[in-house]
Length: 179
Image 1 (cartoon, rainbow, N blue to C red):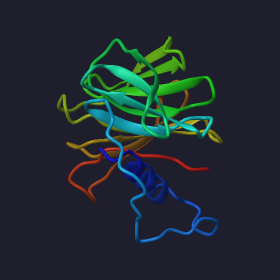
Image 2: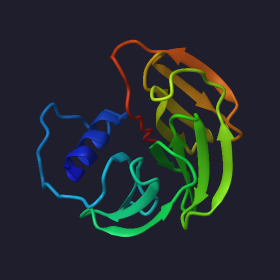
Image 3: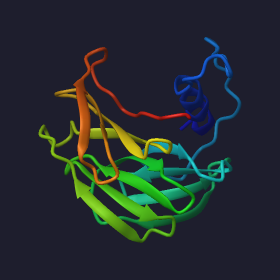
Image 4: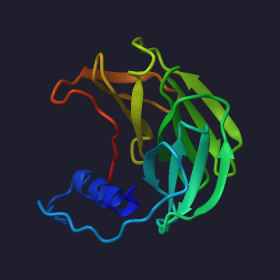
């Protein structure tokens, strides 16, 4: 698994302000780190910008990692098929359960704060894959993997604000927002 390669890609593909941080068409591999986590899914830069959050749908666990991929802490979730995660603030993160189309809000110690089921239909393993949070608008953005590919956003109560079918790829796996 190439942790830093993923981080580099996420920073370059998430760039929305090209004037301040130009993109390069060439990526430079910095380091390869073997992780002790199976089925790693979703990678979010922690609020402190010194750590990473990730999830494993293999063992239903949320991981807090240092920048070398070492597990700093972890906790199990009640649910299956964990796929995406995002940082809300210094105390809260959100995790997606793909099959049930649920979003779980947790504190950073793993205590569940809220759980919401989104009003979306589809095949079990073709659900929500990516989530990110826009701090300036207090909105979540999501991508649905396929059948259909969707981009949509919600308010803090997970009411869908807008929804658009997307077709530029066969499936979609993650999303991020950079202010």
